[in-house]
Image 1 (cartoon, rainbow, N blue to C red):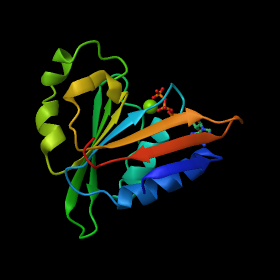
Image 2 (image 1 turned 180 degrees about the vertical axis):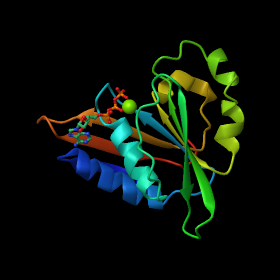
Image 3 (image 1 turned 90 degrees about the vertical axis):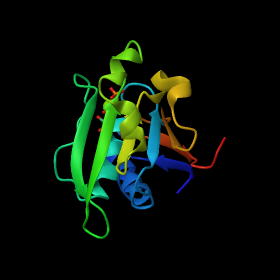
Image 4 (image 1 turned 135 degrees about the vertical axis):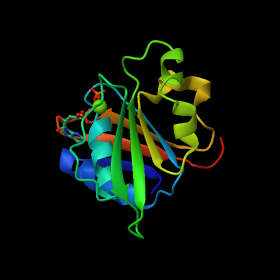
Length: 149
Ligand SMILES: Nc1ncnc2c1ncn2[C@@H]1O[C@H](COP(=O)(O)OP(=O)(O)OP(=O)(O)O)[C@@H](O)[C@H]1O
Ligand SMILES: [Mg+2]
């Protein structure tokens, strides 16, 4: 599921993310990059669908972190951690959340505005870059990883 994709609607982005989500394993970290409105949260929605999460997925702008309870393919409980670091000014704010342990636990971590973490991002991760296309509802999605870079 690495590669470059063009989507023509939010629904298509969600569908791609659902397929991508199905290829993830416990402990995987997905760093999401892209401007405001590029579709990072839509992508997270799709990944959550892969884990049968029914809670509405929204940008956790005011809380930095949302935790969704999902199920893996064996129907075992799996947590999806959804970070939004847009408003985070220093990584010190993140230590209180215990983000280090979360990045290493056996759930799945999705991080909007991942550039905020810089060198603190684990080396083994997926990078998902979203950008606007030529038309209003077009987006370019570039997925790379999780090989070491
Ligand atoms: N092809 C597309 N893929 C994803 N979203 C799209 C697409 N076309 C239109 N949209 C719309 O663009 C918006 C993307 O919003 P979203 O909240 O996912 O962006 P975001 O990158 O998470 O922004 P923020 O940085 O503010 O959290 C939604 O309103 C969505 O309906
Ligand atoms: Mg968002």
